[in-house]
Image 1 (cartoon, one colour):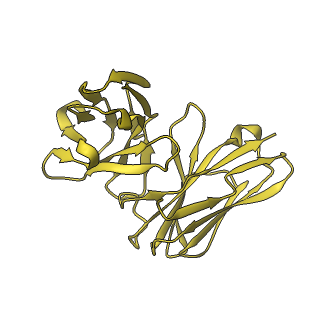
Image 2 (cartoon, each protein chain N blue to C red; image 1 turned 60 degrees about the vertical axis):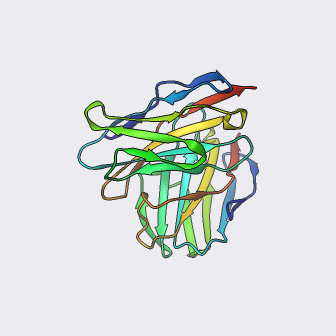
Length: 116
Length: 113
């Protein structure tokens, strides 16, 4: 048990739907991350937040909208997704305040998203 | 552009065999390298990392990795694998600014009892 939880664990949505993924960390960390893991593609870093401020956005389409209301919670709001957005979305957190990806990250179990 | 590649997608070994998983990176400047592991049904977790200093890095569960700058490699090794090492292993690299992290495609290891 890593102390990072994600809900829901599985999500099926249509292309016109709006949904949100939630991540919560119970480790007292200051930085949080969203990753995308597609079939047959390497894990991709999407967003980095440190102390609730976005530090990095790695050229992610605007149909993905992150939100970090506090250092324990991170959301990924989804709207008008495409079938190719189907993937496992992983959340992670780290202790440092800089949001450097070199800090040791603790991962959640992921949300398996299917876009129909 | 930075990249990380893992040579083997699937590896099958018998218990007590030695393990070496390949990882090559393509980066400019200082590089920080990691190995992550995901056991079946568990979360991705850090095995070991290299930032600087001794190029031979020891991690958890008897794993080690060697940074060879001239070969742009950071191979993961374990002298004697156990059935419990069955997992997927990911190599990753980050730039020195710490704002870009690139993962390799992963290697699935199966250890037969």
